[in-house]
Length: 370
Image 1 (cartoon, rainbow, N blue to C red):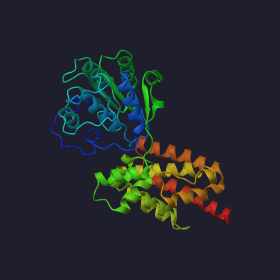
Image 2 (tube, one colour):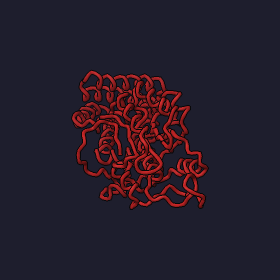
Image 3 (cartoon, rainbow, N blue to C red):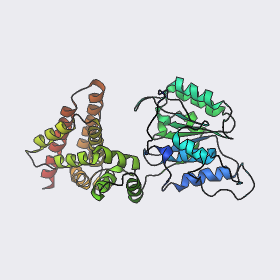
Image 4 (cartoon, helix red, strand yellow):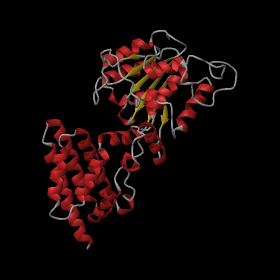
């Protein structure tokens, strides 16, 4: 597989969590039917925009489609390969040589476009290499496939380079653009792609994925991860691996501390998280989500997705103050967290400040309720 992220060549251990290695695809039948229908009618569009939150199967689908198109053994099926009964599923044999090369990351006709580092941008130089790779003749079969993960990470020059590629696609090429936030993409890119929308996963589906990939996880750990996952299996696995669920549980306990004990609880939590970036970020995200729910009417915050039940109940009680103080605190917290990262402020002090402000408002809400 041709990669365009410019990472040095090296022998890598198999990443069994990587989307290209997955053999099970759960609860996303709508985009699969959409893709198969286009394929079977001989109208497979050259650019697909895969939309939805992180961790729900968009990249898994893209690699699944790549295996479907790049499989070495082509049965006499419908679409472009014959007049027999068209395929009813995108399943290909895991033993197929082409599928094995996709899973191993070594298929000559599959190119991926990714940032060079986590949180980075996809640069125009990398997009140039993608364009050059796709203009080569397919090395192993009929199709060439490119996966852009994620298109949201394209800088403006790289986005314009990709737009030109979409407008003038090489023959027998299919591009899959993965997007967690399509609104960030150029309107001209969105308008030239076939859009496939992915929905959040059910708790049952996430539990099944966790059980397959983390067979040693306890029922309590799985439940906690699912409760905070907001329908994302990827987030559930990250929470499970990084101790995020425990960190949010500690956050809930700190928020529930009795009057006079809140500052000590906040300081203890902040100190424990200050050197763990992942857990700190999870707690920060949870606080921001909690403030959003606190600002909603009582009827609107009854289903606080991604928050533990204790925090959801607190958000419901907090709405007794009305939305204004919580909206103001949401704006303060968002800016404070962003500034802390931007100029390297003390993360522990930022967390203590926001928790203290929340606890003060919660005390006011309690008084009003009584």
